[in-house]
Image (tube, rainbow, N blue to C red; front, side):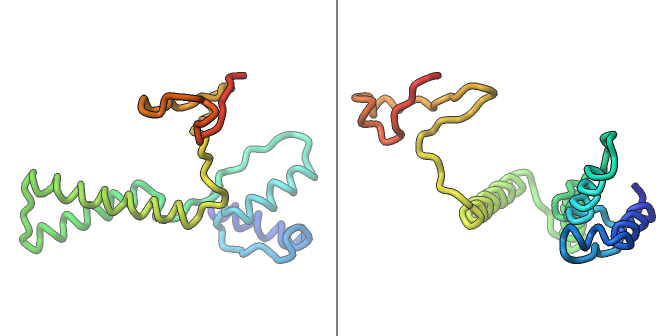
Length: 155
């Protein structure tokens, strides 16, 4: 859908009062097919059509775009070159390792802050229709009832 089509859709959903009935507030008429517009549009389609209709996915934030992140990396490299910074292969490796370390710490902290449930201590992963348990370390062999991860029996 083009921006003009999304804007017309938002105006139509607001004009009919359907968006207000569903969410308690009108849609922002900005031409962006975001989560609120998608929610109201899908609900309207569920009620008014018998044939499934394809809807576009909602717009994602700029920072999730690989193209924008690549552009930012290129800009930083260009600015560094213009300022006279020369980086050899060893330095690039060192810089990338440091960036990876910091990125990993940020992801871990963000995941901890946003976590909505405790982490499952059983180390059982669902793969397809099967439960797969990670192996016990050799130094922890012994009575399976003493295993703090709990007892696992394949179904």
